[in-house]
Length: 189
Ligand SMILES: [Zn+2]
Image 1 (cartoon, rainbow, N blue to C red):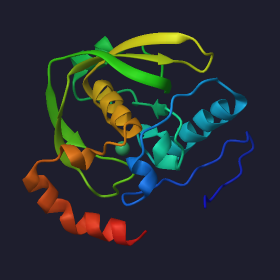
Image 2 (cartoon, protein in one colour; image 1 turned 45 degrees about the vertical axis):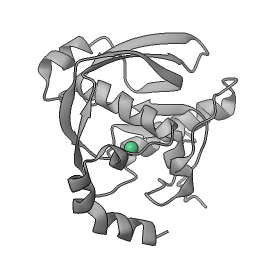
Image 3 (cartoon, rainbow, N blue to C red; image 1 turned 45 degrees about the horizontal axis):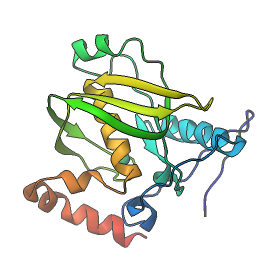
């Protein structure tokens, strides 16, 4: 079901599931052990995200159900320079395994897109700052606090892991505006 493109370093570009795929509505299952397969999946997800020019990708979007997502916000991508300075010590790409948000504050409203919704964007209100606890690829527990665009990406990807999609957060008016595009996406399944 996936189109693979072999690479010299054995990473593979995975097929991105778009709106209408059942897997996007499934809640992820906790990862019990950091196996070689989890390492390979994380690597392939990073590769796939970069190739698609995305800043985040969750397992469901590549047809998996493990609780894992990857995020990579390029330097300079956040218009909120204070947030960028705040996030300076956070090393990208982030691989979040079994992540959960433990604290959040403030709010931000801004445009959001998603690799599973090509050509669809909408204004979504999110927390300005989140603290997330997760397991890293070494199996160690980590905590990170992020602001701005990175905080938005974390919230978006964690929604995916719960089977929640960005259109669920759209206003009724926004949903109506993209209804035709959504129907075409779902019909292409
Ligand atoms: Zn998404």
